[in-house]
Amino acid sequence: MKRFIIKGPNKVIKGEVDVSGAKNSCLPLMAASILFKKNVILKNVPFVKDVLTMKDLLVSLGAKVDFSESKKIMTINNNKNHKLIVPYNAVSTMRAGVLTMGPLLGRYQKKKIKVALGGGCALGVRDTNWHLAGFKSLGANNFLDKGYVNISSKNGLIGSKYKFPKVTVTGTSNLIMASIFAKGKHYIKNISIEPEVIDLINFLNNSGAVIKFLGKRSIKIEGVKELVSGRHTIIGDRIEAFSYLCVGAITNGKIKINNINPNHLRSEIGTLKKVGYKIETKYNSIKLSSGIKLKPVNIKTGPFPNFATDNMPMILAVLTKILGKSQIEETIFSNRFMAAPELNRLGAKITIKKNKAIIIGQKKLISADCISSDLRTTFSIILGAIAANGSSTISRIYHGLRGYYNLEPKLRKIGIKIISKN
Ligand code: EPU
Image (tube, rainbow, N blue to C red):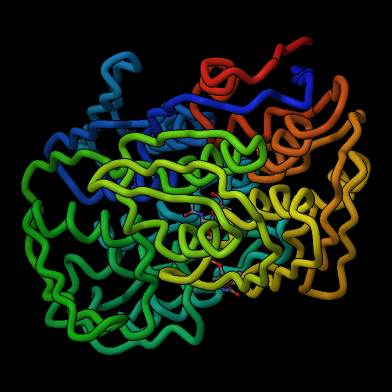
C-alpha cells in the first residue's frame, strides 16, 4: 500500500497547475450514457480511480467502453440491453454507483431494477431516501429485499411534481436522469445547482432532452422519446482547483490555476480574500498570491453557491497556520472533520464540538506520521505536511487517488518535496 513522504516546511510555491475534468461531473455523465443507444463521447475525462470503478460498473451492466487516457477521451456505447442489477460492491466502494439507478429506471421503466442499498461511509450516514421518493413521484415503487432496493413502475413513468426536502447532489442528478423519457412533464423543486449538476443538464439538453429552469432551484422536464448521440467536454474540477490554491496559500506562495471557471469557486475565493490573500481571476484561471497580514475567518459550508463541504478540509488545514481564532461550521455531513485529529498530530490546535471546528492558528507545525481516511482528508493532511517542519508520512493515500488525477506529479511540478513508497 502506497504512502507519501513529504518534507517540509516547503519553500514558497511559485508555479502553475492545470486542473483535470471534474470527477463529480464525469461520474453522473458516465451514468447518463445508459439513456443513449448511440455512442456517448466524453472529453476532458479525469482518469481517477472512481472513474475507472464507474467504467467497470457500466461494463458489468453491459456497456462497451473505449478510452484514451492520454487524449482524456472516453466513448461509451449502451446499444445492448443491460443487466438490471447494481451489485453491493459497486455502491459500497464508490457511493456514486447509485447514479446508475436513475438512468436504468428511465430506460427500463416497467422492468424491475435491483440496486444494492449503500450503507454509511466515512462522512456519515448517506441515505438514498430522497432519490427513492423522487422516483415514487414518477410512479415507480420500491421495496427492500436482502439488502437490495427493487424499483419498477407498473404503468411506466409519468411526470408529476417533487420537491426535495433538502438539497442533494446525486439525488437531483438521479431524478433528472429518471425523468428524461417520462410521459408528460415532471416538475422538480429545491434541486442542487452545483456546477456539476448544471454540466449534466447542459449535456442532456444538448443531446435532445428538454429541461427548463423555472426558477433558481426549480426545473421542468418534458419527456422525450429518445436522445441523440451525445458529445460533451467535462468542466474543470473546482475541488481540485481549490486544493492547489490552498498549496499556494499555506506556503505564502504564488500559484496560478488553469482550466477552471472562477465562478464555480466564488464563495471560496471570497473566503481567501477575507483572510488576506490576493486573488486575480480570468475567465478560465485563478491566481493567488500572499497578502501582508493574514487574518482568521469564520466559514459555514452549504450547497452551491455556498462554500463547498468538499473544499472545507483544505481551508481547515490553511487556517491552522493563520494566527488567531477561526471557526468552521459544517452543514452537509455529520462526520467531515476527520482531518482534524491528523492535523493536530502535526501540531495544529483544532477542537471539534458537534458540527463546528474551532481553529487556533499556530506559528509552527511539526512533522508526524499520519493516516488518511477519505478523499479530501488526504489533501488536507498533505497541506499540513507541506507546512510542517521535517518529514511526514501519510499512509492510505489510495483514498486521495480516488479523486485527484496525477496527484504526486502535479505536487512535485510546483516544488513540493514529495516521494511515494510502498
Ligand atoms: N441525504 C439524505 N437522503 C438522500 C440524499 C442525501 O439524507 O436521499 C443527505 C446526505 O446524507 C448528506 C446530505 O443529504 O448528509 C447531502 O448529500 P448529497 O446527496 O448532496 O451528497 P452526494 O450526492 O451523495 C455529492 C458528491 C460528494 C459531495 C456531496 C455534497 C458526487 C459523486 N459526490 O455526494 O462528493 O461531498 O455531493 O456536495 O457528486 C467528494 O467528491 O469528495 C464527495 C464526497
